[in-house]
Image (cartoon, rainbow, N blue to C red; front, side, top):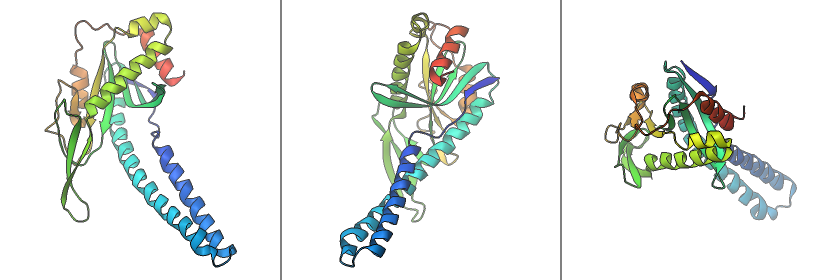
Length: 249
């Protein structure tokens, strides 16, 4: 069975949702106070801009909260699949670390005896189209209210997960003891992009050779994956040290 070493946590983006909610509350309270206690001629000068800021930040908080909520729902579905797999492995969810002077976040990390999987979850409703080397993929969908068709681009998740792998390896080699850092430099890290929305159609981009799968096929893909012959196995000590560096215990 998979050993879950770190449970799913709120994503880093949730902090911005909380900040926008605080801005909303402070702005509206200040606007009401200005309208009540300041002279009438201050109304347009102080209260009205504060009310405008409050309602704008409320809309921003709702918008960002919806996006974060949908992403969290997708990550929870994938986490449930990983936690209940029967393979001998360790899994960490919601990994956050600093690399390249920037905060980095990985949805899920599955550590087995012969490969480490960096798993990126996408929870997108609609039809996804794109090529492996494209900078952006396209999401085709219908608006909820008008039912009109529209499309939007999003950064190629294969490139996104490749960047995550680069920074994860760099972070591990920098923070592992020299013996384990040398061993870590020789292991195989495979990126996986999982499309998890039940109303999403990723059939045009699913590609097991490059690690793009639907959530229904995720367990089979992970169980059957074989790294290149040149890849080194992960010793028990290395797996333990990687877990320690990424979880702090």
